[in-house]
Length: 514
Image (cartoon, rainbow, N blue to C red; front, side, top):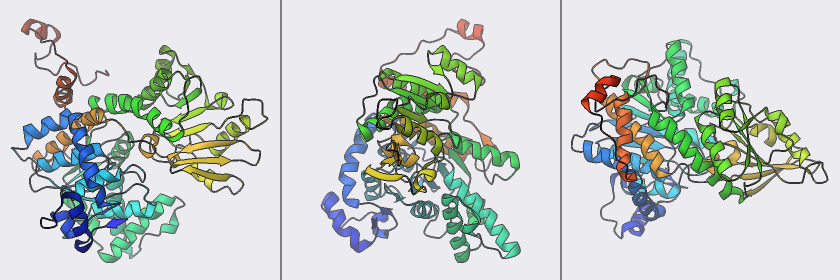
């Protein structure tokens, strides 16, 4: 692990560009923590390729960089530190932002991308692949904290962890000021929340009003994911949301592109890199047929798999039936399932007893052909699959085949393979979504940051959750069409009047579902 220091980084700087005389501020300050700065040259080469595949972000740089809409504003990010995210970070920097960054997943960082961002002086980065939970929350805390011990003006969040830390810290500081009571990590059985409470406890002991100052400074947050948005909406309904939020996830050019087309690409990429299994002919179960599940099911069927869907929502279930999938319960297909993918955004989907039954059915000498079923998650976090139930059972042997690929063997000889320790398989076992679709998502993130910054003193955004207006959603799509060689038809004035729209858009009402 490499934590910055001037002495340490002089030689690394030489390795990157042959000189130690022009250390950038990030390297010179030593204010970063990554795997290896020597990976920067590789990361820079990979980033340059992604720029060709991210036309939305490159166009936004050309349009907004002269205006510097984020000049002097501090932006803290908690979003997978990948090559694609590096292009987002450098776009925000080109628009004037000062940046600190961490990942939102312990396995998703691409270390060469983190190194390239640090070496270029674009952002202070605290992320590496394979963090422990304690390290993850320490990195989140450091990404929130500037050298003057104050916080950011804006937040880019994915899953809501950075926003969560601020809100929990704010609440704990209020409790401490009135009762003198510090957060108790042993008050919860949740291993990750223990880390959150330890982080906040240590912060209060150093500075008992820090999170309150951070919350008061933040102009707003732009949130990337379904799970993070649900958290924000809940807080807004309860009246506890401390600053405005823009829901990037429900921009059409995010949810229908990242969630469907991104997962369609990256799910089987992750499974293949992890296991080399041939999916053709296999029985694959997708739990959840929302946008993510739709993309996953399409990819698995395209690979020749026999695909079953589980759903609770009758509309989504009917959609799956109309697309030719069999909709059933998980219990009905456990005995024959070769691959199970969770894509629900909920918890407790595939539990230990489900996995034991799968293992037993495929045990050597059983009724089904012996094999090792594969179970993975592309929904959210790590609680869709009962990972803790497996690792805490001493009767089940864990064999790590390679990083993020674990086989669990029961005493009867049956077993299952769990990918990415039940976290996001496409990021833990592969490289996440491809650059083009992330350009759509991150163009929305960039415009949300510009929107929040531009309206920080206008009162337009209160402590609630908003979506970007339709014309900006359409703008994101326009930014990507030329790359694909597409040409749009132009409405005549008569046609536009007939359907009640402006000839330049927006072309659909806010209620249109696409």
